Length: 454
Ligand code: GLN
Image (cartoon, rainbow, N blue to C red):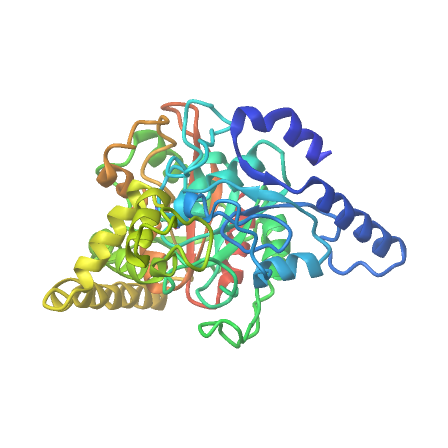
């Protein structure tokens, strides 16, 4: 049924870069047989999924939305891919994304534009706009995204779906093609909090192939979602982040946020205001740390090891082949960030830029730590505005970056956060998201509060 739905509607939406129809049907049949034999490998056995095209898959190309990897079929599965297969979850295909997960609208994909199912003139968010659009248009009941600065939560918010960025280190990055390694985290996306929790439980867990993977038990997010569904938040303290509201936020978004706070209060939570003074520097710090890591990580695309190779005709040196390939293979946003990062890391500038940004990062983590002394979770709007028009910000990188204002601090601190649908904006009828943030390794709180709210 989902493959039929994809065939029916994806021409108009552009959520998928690759559809794995035959493989998905084989996996679905195997799951059916296991269920019939009383040996279902997981509660999600047979429930299909859309996978962001940044996770390696042995049976499908992995492009990361980039021409430099066009047609590349990886020799191994990512840890997340392995876990999905082991749980009997058929992979429907690979979803569109901003090139190497850099962007906020999915317009930086080298292949195609993805449209927001709520209004096809609007962006579906980014970088994981393909996964969010697939969910919102019922092409897939579950999806996987990655969140480096908001790329799971922000697309969820603008498509009225649920997206969770788990605590850094709790979902393996093995086989997740790196954007910025200290920020990247794979995570679950769904249409309900409980669906998302079931998927979270499948993909989270220690993996010794990822050196930053945390060897700690995964909190029982499914139980938390089920408990939350009783809508009782008595005894829960919720902090409203002073710095993530007000000027620059759309009226309809703020109205929805205030209404959400009322719902949380009605369900018994104690809602207080909490200041996180260094959050105003998050954008500046993020856009130094991320490009620095990008400039280092993307050095591996050297025209020798993977994908595209341009000018290999015997008349060019290896260095020229590398330069020609990168020039044609990378899009403008990726080049911009490689250049900014290379500059920020160069000797003489390192202390002034990268070093300073790392100090700000520590201050942001301390803001969170101080706040979580007072409250159990923090909340804010997920995005300052609803989805904007396709094309509106493509020529203005800074305006594009500002769309992630509310989601960036979480990645800098390595904690977990969720976006849960919060109604439609009175301004334009487009979806609004409520962001919930919890301390590291307390991702179950996201599900308790999210399920109580939804
Ligand atoms: N939009 C942010 C950026 O462009 C976040 C991207 C992400 O989370 N992958 O870097």
